[in-house]
Image (cartoon, rainbow, N blue to C red; front, side, top):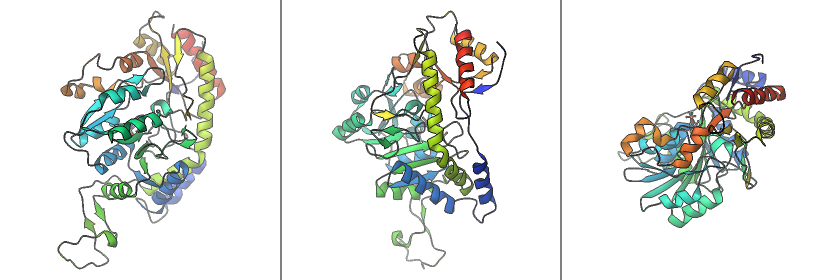
Length: 388
Ligand SMILES: *Cc1c(COP(=O)(O)O)cnc(C)c1O
């Protein structure tokens, strides 16, 4: 077979309207936080139907601010999935909290509510379900558990902008207190680097705004002024220890323009997934994730599960063979508890057998809107020929 093209597991789609909207901002008076950031936030709130959206510098900053807004501190426990990007768990460590993992449902790669409930203690403060590959977790069940034990739910929706859950868009916070998004170039829409938090809670919203900008406010009605300083037009107050996690207007203008294309991106991603599913079904060597009936995922990833015991190659051999044919894949994810940094917390191999087995069999196939149907046919053929 000829080596036709190079394919990557994910990449951005940038249109002419994207570049022209960024250029417009470069020639405007505002480069960093200005009118575009507010418009982008309004667009995210409007799209998800959450009351508030706060744009931040990346998805990791969004997670960190969500933790800070909840005052996560020493001895607080936060439950998340081991099958995620490290940031979903690291945000807890930033605040001195304790990360607790709950194993996944191997059919979906999503955190299993039954496993969550087993991990709840008196110290559990938050659950962070991760919408792996773009499919929403079972939020209704998770929120029932959260209510029963009075814990807070933050959705890590980094994979799931445009996904639906029970006819609402992910990020509506129908069953959660906050949801976070990432706009890294591999995600469904991009701002270069970028992220956002949505919430329906006004007090959380205000805290997030403050924390995003050094803990500083310029809102007169919020001033505390303990020393009775003169309150002139220059006056501002630092009321808490915040960060500089702002998004720029340059990035927000790209985000606004990308939001206009989101529905078409999602449609194309779903079409590609359908083709992959058809291509790999009825072949015992492969398995694909099942789609839950409560939602419509906007796929960020297409995880293919390979039963390596049924083929005569190791995962490394398959990876190398595919690489030589132009297929540059990735694996999502090395379970976080197996990262060397996490060893100090006592985690070991065997702790989360379902996530570990999933990791061993998973490869993520190319999934982005600029792939043509012929590309997908080509990719399926390459895999079926070389992954055996
Ligand atoms: C990408 C990602 C993040 C972090 O987003 P950044 O914008 O890269 O900081 C968090 N959680 C998950 C599940 C992700 O995939």
